Image (cartoon, rainbow, N blue to C red; front, side, top):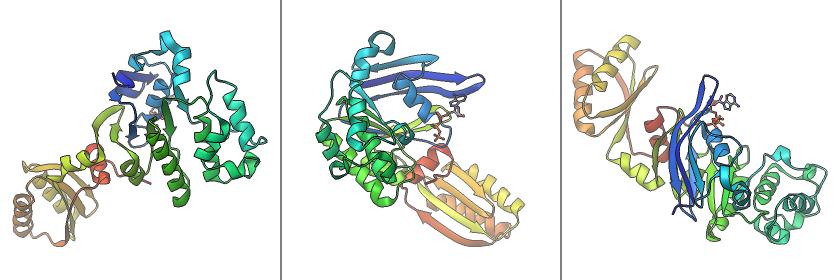
Length: 309
Ligand SMILES: Nc1ncnc2c1ncn2[C@@H]1O[C@H](COP(=O)(O)OP(=O)(O)OP(=O)(O)O)[C@@H](O)[C@H]1O
C-alpha cells in the first residue's frame, strides 16, 4: 500500500476550477515534487491532502486512512511546514519548537530537531533576529515536532540565497535517509531535479506528467528542440510556423516574435522542410540551434509555459 493515495481530486471556488482532476500515489521514503505554473492548483492540492480544505470530489488516503474518519490519527502522521509569518517572533528557536511540540501527543526531541535543522548554536536567538534561511529551517523544524512520516514543504526555499537553499536541500536529504516521505513544491527546477525521486507536473488543475526526473527527460530525449531565429516579417514567420506545425514529427511549437521554438522526433526531416520553406518563400534564417532536453524543457513541453525562478 502506498503511504499516500490521491484519486480524482477536484476543487472549485465559485466558477474557478482550482483543481480539476488530480490523482497520484506516493511511496514511503520518496521525495515527491509537484511543479507547475502559477495558479496550476499546487497549493490547493496540498491543502486538501493536509486536511485544511475539503475536496468537492475525490479521495485522499494516508496509510489507508481518510480525513472524515481518522482525522486525529492522520494529524499525528503528517508534518506541515508553516509560513514563516506563523513563527512567534518574540520567542527564541527552542521556545518556538517547544510551543509547537505541545500541540501533539507524540513529539521528537527538540535538541535532535535543532541539530537536524542546524540551529543548535542559535537556540537562544529570537525569531526576529534570524536570517531568512534560518527562519525557513525553523519552519521545517516545526513541521518535524511530531516526528511525522509524511512531510509537506510548500516552496521552502523561495526567496532564499543559493547557499541557504542548499542548506535546506541537505535537510530534505537527511530526512530521506531517515526514511521520511516528503511532498515538496518548488519554483526551482534544479531543486526538483536534485531532490526528487519523482516529479509531478501539474497544469490547469490536472496532472500532465509524472515520473522520475531522469525518465521525464528520457521520455522527451528522442525529441530534439530546435530554436530558429528569423529576420523576416511576422506574417511570413507565422506561415512557417503553420508549415512546421503540420509536419507529423513536430510535437510542440511556439512563436516568440521572430523566434520559433519547436520539438521534433525527426530533426533532419523537419529541418529539411524548414529550409525548403524558407528558400522557396525567401525567409532569412538568422540563427538555428538544436538542443538536448533538460527538466526545464520537459516542463515547457508539457505545459507550454516558460519556467520562472
Ligand atoms: N480561496 C480561494 N478562493 C478563490 N480562488 C482560489 C482560492 N484558492 C485558490 N484559488 C484559485 O485557484 C487556482 C489555483 O490556485 P493555487 O494557489 O492552488 O495554485 P498554485 O499552483 O499553488 O499557484 P502558485 O504557484 O501561484 O502558488 C488559482 O486560479 C487561484 O486563484
